[in-house]
Length: 86
Image (tube, rainbow, N blue to C red; front, side, top):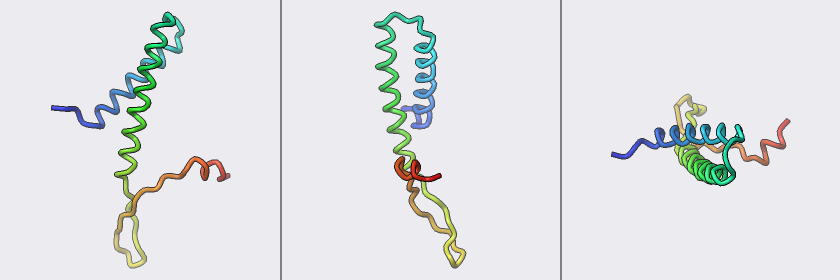
């Protein structure tokens, strides 16, 4: 039985945190640092993919003018528009 997507994401984040801590200590040989960095980049891509998948499934629950509940797709703020706001 495969793991739930949320468990995969959580494990990837934990592993990524461990890699970052190990690299920040600076006591690894260069070759091992490069391997850890490559693994970390793969984990970043995995996490990014999982977050995008989750973002696509998120919907916003709102009330219309008649008071009925409706759902609308979640549209994240783009990086460009976020930088323009005060």
